[in-house]
Length: 325
Image 1 (cartoon, one colour):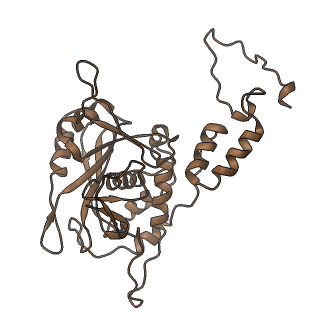
Image 2 (cartoon, rainbow, N blue to C red):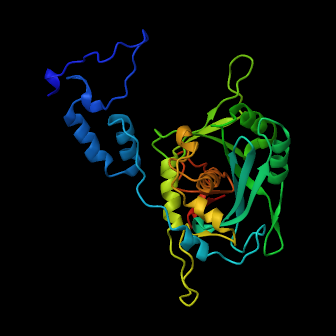
């Protein structure tokens, strides 16, 4: 079929170079054969990460997430009675997911335990125009909070993830001045072969050299992270009578409102679709994905395994699903 194909101009154009979005199956003879594509597909279908790369880069199609959103009512009905703003027994460190909008900043704080078990402990909306300094000062103050634990101690927020897809100059400037090594500045990359890839420095010195401790941007594949999060949200809670512990990855929630859970499981298109962060996601889901990213980059104290592609430092061992120094 392809040897007899012809390129034909179907529109007069505007006098500018033409651009095409086309599947590799239409490659000219001798460039990339259907046999090559079939061989790549057979190998890729064994690995979801490789399969997404194949669909994105070879077929030129959008990766469709496998798995359905959990029912919001089911998550709402299994809320727990622990106090909002307090770390339940089992929480070992805290992360935050930060979502930037034109007129507000939304922040969720989550405690993480062994086996990737998590507890949402706080959710706040900071009102204010993100083009102005006031709301950023509110964010800085919130992230300096130490949350009390049920055992009488207090935990700081160890890492927080904030995307630079919106208000990029403001995000980078704030991360540069206040974020320090706790800030994980992220940017969506649907072509990534891993949920979180190697970070790239964005700050350069006067001679064009990269500043070692400057702001770094972590490319993230939102579809993969969303798929993992949906799997965790779908885990069933064991009964008290069974005496069985919660499964690895189980997500605990306090008595948030119905609206929180409706947005967490929403399948509506939002601005993140264009930024490649949350494909077809509601606001709360996007934020939940960000604190998951923050947890994945928490080195050297504790680090979620299986989510991030960068090598682990030496001397770190695996303990119940987390790497512990």
